[in-house]
Image (cartoon, rainbow, N blue to C red):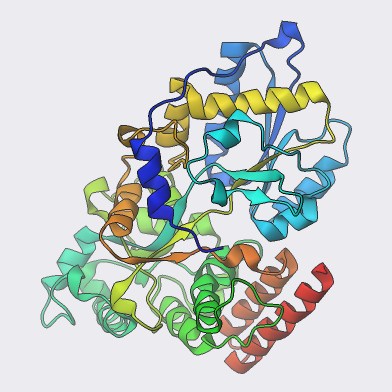
Length: 440
């Protein structure tokens, strides 16, 4: 599962633009496209893309967005309908195992041929290609440098610059000192709310857990496990405690907070930091009353006390794989293939992919000057190109949504003081084993 993402980007930047784009129209039997969108935060963009494509080609494109944390259940419901999605997403090998009966072989498609690194694709035992990533993303701790500079100017700061924050110990010292000076800094807390509303805990039970589980994989020399020991549960607890105890919201109230609440707090200058990904720039910039300037935005790695933290970069990868529904009509399958080809070939499609969706697209059709220019994408690329070690996205190997939901529920109980950390650890270990067995 570990891949050289920097090499993919380098190949994409160096390659020339392919010729050709989507063909066909409504009057030549091109079929229709129904895309089931995974990310609520970019719903408006996808609906605009659908309208633009239809105006340009005459082909009908329908976009439906699943609610946060409910993509699998929504897909199960929609795929059974006569008007089923023709284009949908899986999150990696585990997702493919669940949906392989619906995934068309894309090995001969223009979409696959344009993929910079073919090893990024999801393949089957028969050698077919069944899922193609359409973006590479990264996440870490987003900071507001205006507030950080204000802190560095206070009396006896824990460190004097961001460059000195290169471990959990230094991060903890800074955060706890900043929290003690929150009134002086004009913030409600260092971190925005740790969203633990059911369905909104993915930043913790998936993204934060990724670092701890990845280190266990590294130690054991594997890419997946039927059972984990949660070896680095104490390190996970380190950063989770730092988040919930130095935030805008009392830990007992976190069950009422969603991701949008968290991002709004950061955008309004009520918090100095928030864990999220490069896709979050629009969630910051588009908040009414936003006070955070683009030039003040950047990333720090998610430090939790893992080995070799001084060399640690951001978590880089993808769980966004396009699949074509092979159980829909041939015309609809071709229309969907034409649509994704348009996204990566046409100037209009590439503009949407890069500048509206904020995607770093791993295709040879995107030149160096077609990378996103928003501050989080720029910061992410800086980490990838400055010699830091990226943490791969291994959470695509996590057993199931049920595992993640139960993990999230345990984290909420811990935050509310109704579950011990030992019980959280036991829940993770037991649920992982049970869900991996169930998947088989």
